[in-house]
Image: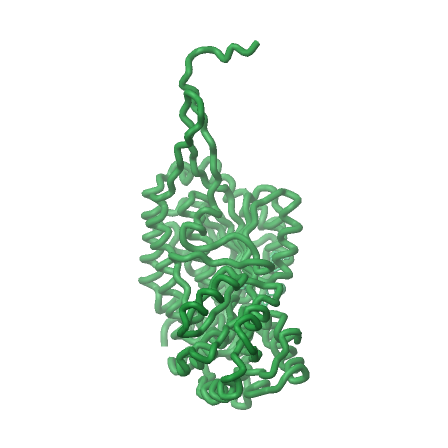
Length: 493
Ligand code: NAI
Ligand code: MG
């Protein structure tokens, strides 16, 4: 097929100051194709010394490099060029993303298109960062300057690798920051390939650096480093808490997107076919490895038995298969670690609730981290499978009696990233929307995500917002400037 299927065993160093740079220890770690369990690349395992180098480069680029005086227009143009590069290479990048994550190729293609759109959006926004003139009661001019935060450390997960890189790099560059990106150790390949075009589009050396490595070493060193001004993180709540603690020592700005246990609520009057589809799509897209997965499916009691039955019937049609097969709707989980973690929840779920479908490893696959799409029903919201983020193809269906119960159960979680409600009753829909403690609420849909609208959570799903103007805001400082217009001395002493 294409060239990337032949280059089985590439090695990747770190990308620092515009150059591929060997890591200090020389240690590498393997990167896998989760559908075959074969090694497809070897990547540098970075430590403190490597992070030191990257911070030095990013710091110099921010403090005294040409980037510091690159105009907003030119930063915007560079972002447009990055988008163009992504579009030119979209087939190759989608295939690489597909092979490295195990997600279906069709979904990978959507992701790569969204990556390009994200760079375009922030390319346009770069020139629309405005300050204010402040009506102070003095013979003076008071105004604000919006300035970049500085060096941004960006730590991303493995479920949407290049898209998560784009969500972090694009607003940071629009704002004028410099970046040190740490991809997830499971899925660094697309971001690393992307780095090959940085010089060509005119990004000066040191503006975007990529450090490979494990979270506990490379990631932790980045968070602790005093030369880093801000950390943007997407990943587990457990690591989010570690990051806040460590960042406290240097009082870094931190933004966190930590996933959830999002409710997808179905009322009797909702469109039936759309609801069944929406319940499945909400939780099984991307193998369920989605921070906003609708993993708690709340169904009104009147339709509950039929709903579970219809979901189960339709779930039988979900085609598991090779990620590169265009018919595939669900690939393997990303790693052995994630497969084991989700498998242990499958065993737990069999004790805590009833199985409508799935619950096992599918027989037809000899290799690969495949698991069946699984629906647990008669789940109590106090069960661990209803409280803990599973991050795999596992749905829990929970019945409710009245609207007030739906809201109570929906909000009875430590998380608050997303939620959805399905009904034709406009009064009910908006009452529920207002009652839900979540950063994203869909009505009669679940999962559509657009760069124009904010993304982020309430409660223990984190803080800060990505995307839209909100995403750019997180990379900006506000400087207040006071210009005295009164030439007379203060005359105080
Ligand atoms: P993780 O939170 O450990 O990894 C995410 C990123 O953080 C990776 O780049 C990793 O290298 C880095 N990291 C890990 N430990 C770190 C540390 N001490 N300091 C700095 N960076 C660190 O996620 P993991 O272990 O891959 O998955 C565990 C669970 O996390 C999943 O089952 C899922 O529930 C959740 N998760 C949520 C995501 C989301 O989109 N909100 C994405 C990935 C995982
Ligand atoms: Mg981890």
